[in-house]
Length: 78
Image 1 (cartoon, rainbow, N blue to C red):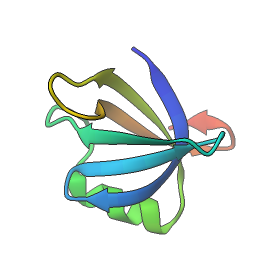
Image 2: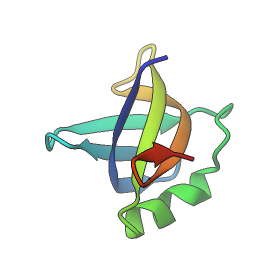
Image 3: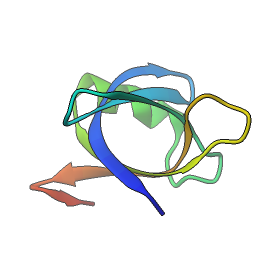
C-alpha cells in the first residue's frame, strides 16, 4: 500500500490536508475502517506532529482515502 509522510495542516471532520517534505499539499478522507478516529486529527495538526499516512486512491472523490495514520518519532512510525 502506498504511503507518504508529512504534517497535517488543515482538518475538517474526517477530512484533512497533509503537507509533505517538498511543500506539496495532499487531500485525504479518513477511511471508516482506519485505526484512527476523526477526533484525533485536530490535535495532530495543532501539535504539528509528523505522520505517515498509508492510503489508496479514492473513487469519484478529489483526494485519497487514508487507511492508517502513524505518528513518526525519531524517524520511525509508531
